[in-house]
Amino acid sequence: MNLKLLYPASWKDYELLDSGGFEKLERFGNVILIRPEPQAIWERVLTEGEWLKQAHAHFHREQKDNFRFAEEIKGGWKKLKAVPDSWHVKYHHPSFEVNLRLALTGFGHVGIFPEQGENWNFIHDTVTSWNSNKSRVLNLFAYTGAASVVARAAGAEVTHVDASRPGLNWANQNMQLNHLTDIRWVYEDALKFVKREVKRGNKYNGIIMDPPPYGRGPEGEKWTLQEKLNELVFHASQLLEQKNSFFILSMYAAGLSPLVGMNVVKTHFDVADPECGEFFLKSSMGRDLPMGTFLRFSR
Ligand SMILES: C[S@@+](CC[C@H](N)C(=O)[O-])C[C@H]1O[C@@H](n2cnc3c(N)ncnc32)[C@H](O)[C@@H]1O
Image 1 (cartoon, rainbow, N blue to C red):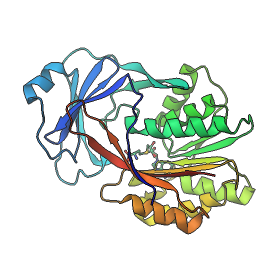
Image 2 (tube, helix red, strand yellow):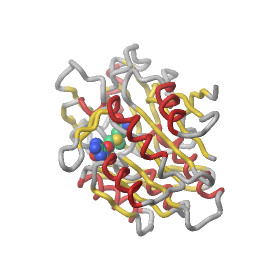
Image 3 (cartoon, helix red, strand yellow):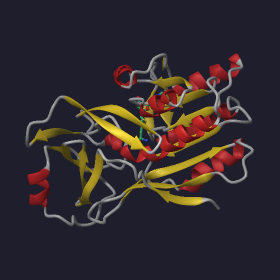
Image 4 (tube, rainbow, N blue to C red):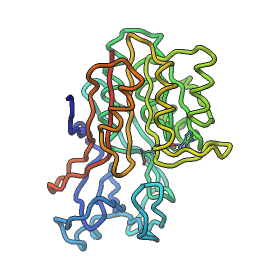
């Protein structure tokens, strides 16, 4: 089995400075943040005082119960030093770089999931290896569009689907920040869109999906990963080209093993040995953080 533990090694603008005490201390460019991290059940290496001295802002949880999923963490930011309303970071890879806009959001998110850098490398390297200016990439649950921007920068035509208008707006800003154009923005429920694309007979060379544990489509369509993922992957499998194609599934739902994604994908794709495993963030202090599972293949 092709099981891996991967972390994005080429970030200069992102650093996990420490973790522990149900929190993480991270640097995004020049901005240092303390955010909740339900899995960090161990003790910090640096003292809490040292964290507070370094940090520009601290996201406080309001509720401790049932905070297994990032989406369920409610709370607010306490600014400890001046923080800009939004700022930019650069993601570097030996063969490309992209700029991404960050901001403090009400959910404690900042607009990127840094561990996804590993997928951005895969997307860029796979799309450029095809040497085609006609490849098509579909990004589902696409959030602020980092993967869409990477795929577009690599030369693909990109369709970006999300159920959040502010998210689509943010992704558009990320596209413009990178002097790119013509990403197709789709404000729709991901499953509904995929079913419609199957009916229309459309095909894609790349499909990326980063589904949350729970979500809502624009018309209130209920998304629950455990109930709907198998159906979504089944329909998505009918959209993917047989050759010159890739598929990426990321999952941050606590408790799901990489083998869950492996079994769902093997059910619907004729692919012998996909790469699967866990993403993690490497801590400068040695307490690395698990950041969910991934499954991907190219063929
Ligand atoms: C980026 S994913 C979650 C990322 C990460 N895996 C996590 O759990 O924190 C969340 C995105 O999915 C979108 N979303 C949620 N439900 C959706 C649905 N039914 N159809 C399309 N997009 C949806 C949200 O708007 C959001 O941008």
